[in-house]
Image (cartoon, rainbow, N blue to C red; front, side, top):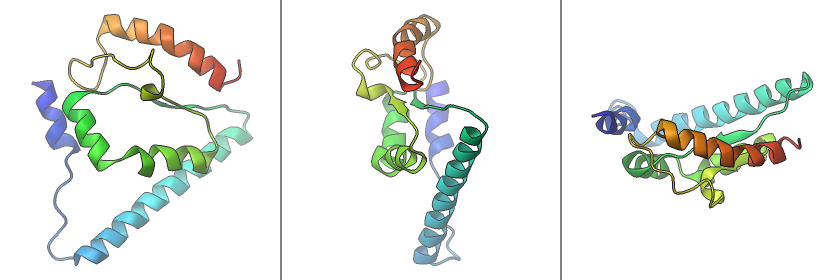
Amino acid sequence: MIQQIWIPLFTPPPPPTYIPKEEFAKKMRGAIEQRFHDVVAAVQKLRARGGKLVFVRLPYTDGLKALEDRGTPRAQTWDPLLKGTAAPGIYYEDFPELSGFNCPEWSHLSAGNSVEFSKRFVPHLRKALQM
């Protein structure tokens, strides 16, 4: 039942018919650019206060993965995020020991798998934080 919630939750509505498609696309691009700008500014504030951060992409599977990969491709989201913030990132698919976990409801690991994933993840986090 939970799996079936993700699809409509992450499927955007169609563009409004009263705004030309080109204008709507321009507004959406602007909103996305503003979001990236806001994230870069937030990262700068955290660093100015001595904070360290690492962006993390945890496992997601099946229908939700297909939907997110199609709607927010890594090359258009994750890669520019890391480049724009100059922050380290840990993307689970980049590491064989972090890949291959099944998310029973497509978005979260089972309790048992979360413990195993965490054991495998911590060394990567330490490295990213230079600890």
